[in-house]
Image 1 (cartoon, rainbow, N blue to C red):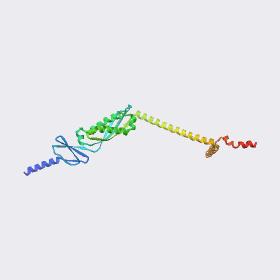
Image 2 (image 1 turned 180 degrees about the horizontal axis):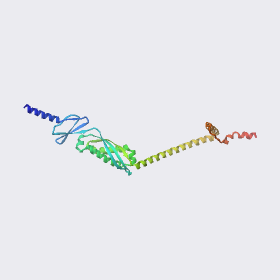
Image 3 (image 1 turned 60 degrees about the vertical axis):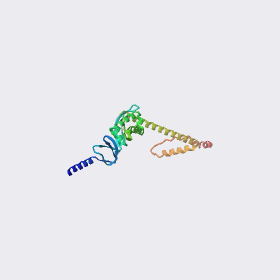
Image 4 (image 1 turned 30 degrees about the horizontal axis):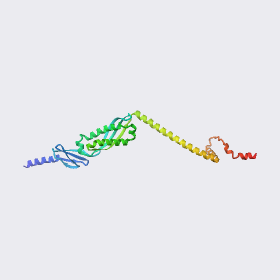
Length: 251
């Protein structure tokens, strides 16, 4: 009797040990009892009925998946290569197991097709300048499709847009031409403002003849600082007019 009891105890102990499961804080366990889905187990020590229950572990952490480079033809017929990264997590472990065979693979594949579809409907300038808008559109479309799987897409980021070499050269020329255009506009605006100031100064000098003499003397002072240069300065006749009436009177 003692031997049989020991064997029975040993068998029960083995069955008990075989049914022990330990789930981490970020894991959930989906229980299948005789093929039918049951409850979802939380983290900690869990025990299932051996040979009756089967538990599938599901991680609820955010998963980061790279979308491989995709060849895309934009709306304005430019061939580019684009890759992205997608962030998602499982919100409903039961749906993630029973609604799709492999939610990781399915989400990755759908992200690739959506990336080609959305970017193919946009112009190249829009892809380069409105990255946030495109990321938001991608996230909305993918999340709506993966929601029945119990998967929540939190973000989609387009990482790199690889342009053909000839397109890079054309964009570099365009950027250089734009910088030259701005430089010419700024130079023209400076000339216009200088002309306005000179006109205002000429109006003041026309009203006050003494201002011309003061300006002439200031010019002489500036030139006198360089002693190694011989300078010939014309003497305006307007500066002699105050003396002309006196000369005539003396005659």
